[in-house]
Length: 415
Ligand SMILES: [Zn+2]
Image 1: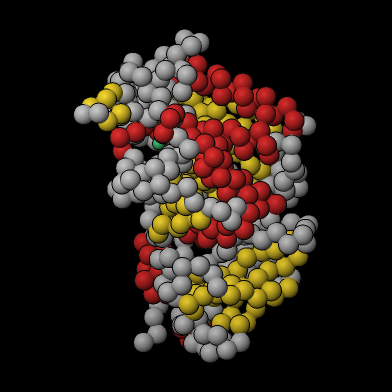
Image 2: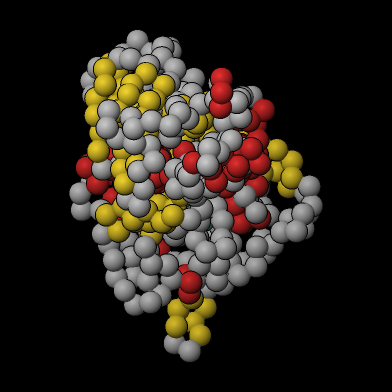
């Protein structure tokens, strides 16, 4: 926040003030973090030219600072986990490049968490690849994250999960409630990129609470609360706060599972405000309103999640469930080709339960029949487990295409 403003429209070549100075400082910090990685972490500035737009009065260069910690298991290294914060800030007007916009919470909190994760995790080895990213242009409608996600899609990158941290440092809400023990994780139920055919299938068999992003949120709750028991992970079954958005959305729109971390109680007097005192009330996103110990705990939940995912096998692919009328439930999936795969677990829950409540190890197989448990009454999923006990997040099955008498249409309903 000592750069005065980090508005995306602000100066780019002044070494002391503006987003350019913040960009260069972040780049240097990530490069410093990478020194302990034995060459496995590389740092780049990913830039593009943004033409005039609603919140961009003049054309500008938008730059993401991206540190990539390459996975060490060749069969897993192309699988990626992305964690981000946005380093740009704004005061009252998103086009105002001059006003002081400290952005201590929105979103230096998330950016600092990502930088610290990179610093700590650089020296460790993971099977899969972790990308630590500080993006710009969030306040101009998700410019930097959209650029990264679009590049990823065009290169066909295998981003298995994306976590954005945005506004993770305020513990005294505008509602007067102090809460240092809860963080929200927002996840969508129906995928942003769902096709008409997928929607038809979903209406037929259910699954509006079982998108990949929702499975990711469940994994975060389980993992986060195991490693950081003092921090409660509150899942919110919604893409973001009511009618609002963040850097996970461009990823969701391109089919990548993604969630948003945000503090429990926000204070709108300290977001997107010019610094001022009005009727005795201090406005502005100032550091005195940030709870640093709390940010550290949110960062720990992120780090535990990323480590667990990047050590684990890929989540099972092509998981399908038999469409046949039966009293048992038959599941099928593709074999994982990673060398450390140990096998799979079937998970299930009541259809009204928020999280998976039951699991059963089924060995290193690619089909399994759950005897006596009907798919009509429970939701099922499959996860992979490696030889050290690391588990992937869950894949929710889709119905198998019907063959024979039932016809080939997987969404065809039997009355
Ligand atoms: Zn923000």
